[in-house]
Length: 203
Image 1: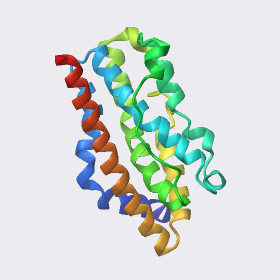
Image 2 (image 1 turned 120 degrees about the vertical axis):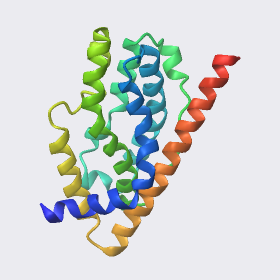
Image 3 (image 1 turned 60 degrees about the vertical axis):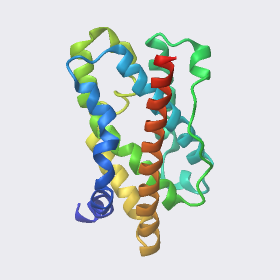
Image 4 (image 1 turned 45 degrees about the horizontal axis):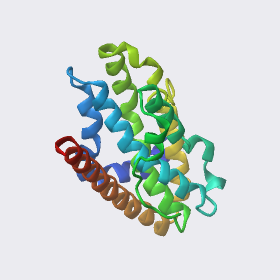
């Protein structure tokens, strides 16, 4: 267990300065005044980042040998939820997406995936709150419920995988550097999405 946790603990400590801002859009959904529009906006932001990240991972050499790539395909759940919330197919297809190319190596991909996988630790809490405040979004929570009841187990599995990839000092260093870059780009994406949404609201 100690070995499993080693790389995750290192990542948690090394990237702690990003965590508050990365978590903030999800934690905002815990407000008692949360609306469907708030939820939809966060799903749009995540789709715009996660869909291209999935594509980059799919074409990253050797990644499929250490991870079950089907477990990474959650953007489809986001799309399903957006349609349930009333987004039209044409609007879904027009969502602006983050620009990213396939990673050169598995270690770099794992660093970026840490950024997204870490956010799943909040999903159960957010989903329960949304359903308590807005029971009619039950059919629009497939993304948040993707690992219902198995989030902790999945996190430990991810920890084992990232620990294997980071056995060498070089790979461990690359994972941490990639996680920093992933957080930086995610937060830049969130800021851009919020600015674009604000411009539309006053346009």
